[in-house]
Length: 546
Image (cartoon, rainbow, N blue to C red; front, side):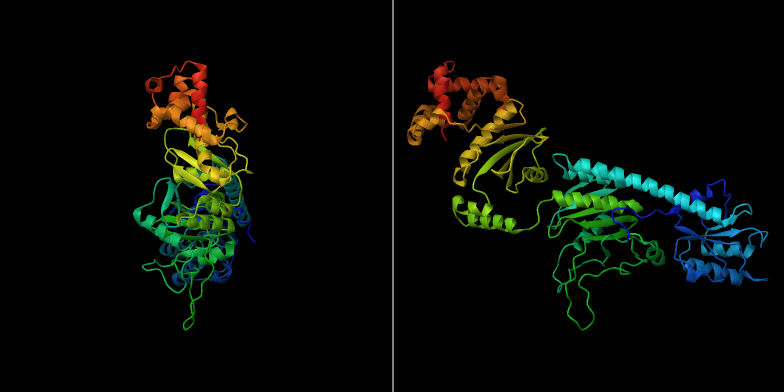
């Protein structure tokens, strides 16, 4: 059985064989098509070689089978049988039987479009066969090297902070085509590379539908003819050649239905039964090769690829990308996911958060606020990747900041490409306070250019004052500025950063002069000297009160 991780041996281009000066082969009939390939060489002197050919061969013959006085009819039948068997080319050896290639054979090959090569007397058929195997070994080595480099490149892309788009970009580059990730609702989440023509693009979208479970009793309205599906995808090759090659490819044989698995098909008079959902599907539309790969089981995510050409290693490279994307597109539907869904439904129906928190599987939680490097706000894919890296599916991409609830037993470590603020570990009823802590920690982390900053959880003087007394004092002290959140936020950040105008401006994403104006306004409204450390301490105590 062929190893699915190793690409099949690539065929040899006929032009490469003709370029071997040591063989001295010469094309004397048939099309001069640079795309003509041969899969192996085979010598036969049978008058009818059809039963002994598998397809894709360079058939070698010295003409021993040609009867004396053979006319055009004999050669026409002989060449037509080679073509019917899928033969790629015919090599005719000059001497010792024939001093020249029969003219009628040249005409028959020209008529049937079969490349005819003249093999000089000095070149043995064994030498031709050996040259074919050498070229195939070189091609296989080059293909293995290409696949290995692609695997390394894809793995490096998957290790990036926002890996989904880099993986698609690397895949599109390696295949010299277009790669896209489709969501369970069939929307195109992300794509990279030059897009295929509209017709091929629509056909590829339709192809992804074959990889999603459907009602076996109801065919999809307007669905296209079924393409070749299965795992791995089929390739449009001659059926005899594909069966003999033992490769990953199956035969399309000029029809979508030939050799294709039709989902939900049943014999006449019997009920249609659901068949296992295929894991991959392929098609060719307007010269564009299309392939789709289901990501995992039950996800609904699909990787789609469109390329102008298809080589034996392309499927292996795409399969590696599909395996990586399966890991990156989230967890499988499980009891944990069901519990999260149940918690969400109860919250929407009005159940207080503390009463549903036990469904999430942890007693204490960290709130994490995160901002990506750069100016662009995080998109859903980047937010999902962040949640995966932190080990939590409870992710909220709220504007420029992503909020993630992380179980307290999951360590939160710095992540490349992100600035993180982490709260103390709290029970569900204290989540709002933890949200405030994480927001403040993130602001300080950005201001001090620190990758990760945790909210301090050691005992403080504020713990010595009863909460209701502290709250009453804070409301009284901050009353003049309480109605203006911009002033309280600026004062809190400015005090936390020891009065640094520049760092406060960075943390709040405002100009330093705006910070100066707001602090001056706070001093005037509070009627306080903000240079006095006792005043600063009292205000900091009040501002820290939840």
